[in-house]
Image (cartoon, rainbow, N blue to C red):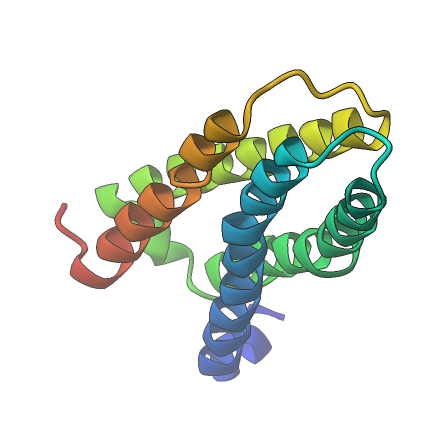
Length: 148
């Protein structure tokens, strides 16, 4: 199997990058939706629209994209186990675990909004909106530059 995967390594890499881009798009957008949702009045029609947008973004785009990112990344490691030898890989892996945990936190916050129980101000979500960007920048630098 690893021989087959190695023969298709560039396809795995392309699919991994495509899935990561889709996942990051959602990770950038969902906390912004939370900020807008927090600004809307409780029970207001706009709030109900945000609930639908948040749920669909998470379930239809972000969850499958995160799963695909992990799947293709794992297949790349199976195809080329030597990749895990670099220190950059361990740092990237730790940051991707952090990004996945943040995805889980965003999912939890979506449920809080769904129940109408949000008590946090829009600024809270605007600040958290920047965290995926910082993580993504560091991850990409680690993968491309391989500084260690």
